[in-house]
Image (cartoon, rainbow, N blue to C red):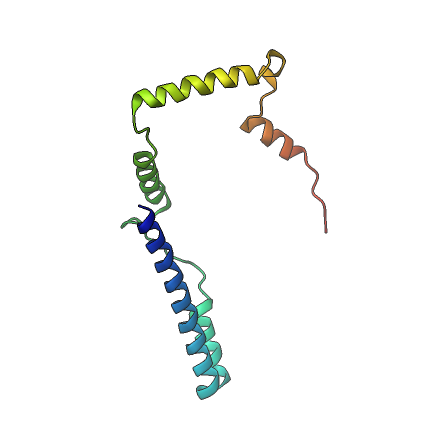
Length: 126
């Protein structure tokens, strides 16, 4: 798995370098050989992409892509053994109950509290 991860990262890096070189070469050629108009046409062709179409595992809409990621990560992020998982849960719950004293029980941070606090922040002009 570790080797596959390294190969994956190396492939991404190679693709990025090749893409950068391809853009640089085509822009350079347009500027040197064809003139200013051809240069800007090449620039717009390569960099003025208003909308990018994403396709992940054959899906192109946001909901389907999110579902694909959810399925993939839910199948990967599972306990190796139910017994060991239960043991870890007991250890965590024991430590967590000792960590929080009774006066903190109603003062835990949650999504609603964060939203309330951020809504009360003042916008600063810079």
